[in-house]
Length: 294
Ligand code: CAA
Image 1: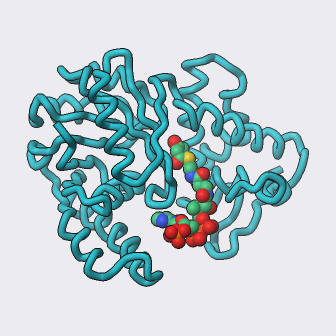
Image 2: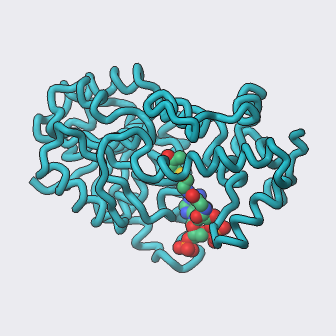
Image 3: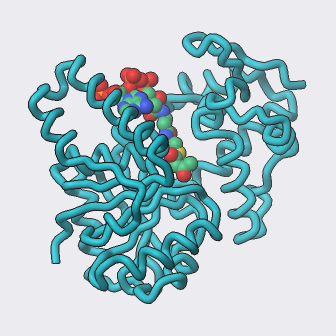
């Protein structure tokens, strides 16, 4: 059965982006948050993004109106009943996911495909919270969702190959490039990205170079769109620390071990752009200033 109607759970940074690109691709989308205030906040950020596209001339106002018309917000899980695919993008905490998947399993039709946007938790473990491990997989999109072209499509040992193919076809309909991978913590991108980011922090700790020079090296020497310390501030130091800990726990390899400086910054509440301070100070967000961290 082809995927026609999409449900997104969580309308934060990732959930709102996923809801936006699904609606832009022509799918009717219902997006669920825990309060009306969070629904409004998520929909307002989609509205802002679509507005920017209209201003740039990349989207006709009439198309924007159609996209808006395909999007609906809700606080009730029951409203997701008729969705063919549910994509979960809530907080990265297993107890919260367990509760959500258990409830959705009762609410949704047996045919509904369940997908998690987790970047680090086990898809297999989440599938075990439901009676449909064969219809459960991972769909990992990247921040900012409208701009990043990749989707990691993750199968577990229990995922039905037909369901995997349907998810790959869905990713293509979103206009993204799908890569196939299996349920190993970090999948492809974070397996490669996280050690790189942690190494950048180690280089700073060891006095190899300054914050700016480390970032400029990778931007100007390798053509990366952002330097690693800017990217850490963008992703969130807390998020990266959390992912690194889960990866270290899974593989017990030093390359996934969080450097002390990263841990101290997380403990200090310097989580990057979202808290106004990380490797840079964002007091003036347009001109971030490197922090003095030694
Ligand atoms: N929302 C939607 N679209 C956005 C956006 C946002 N927040 N920020 C930028 N964009 C879009 C712009 O609209 C623009 O689109 P067009 O090319 O169609 O006009 C495009 O992205 C480029 O944007 P800008 O010209 O404004 O800015 P830029 O050239 O400096 O690019 C960037 C900004 C796309 C964020 C770029 O710096 C980049 O690619 N950075 C790396 C991001 C990255 O690595 N993300 C992955 C993080 S890891 C992750 O998400 C997974 C995990 O598990 C941790």
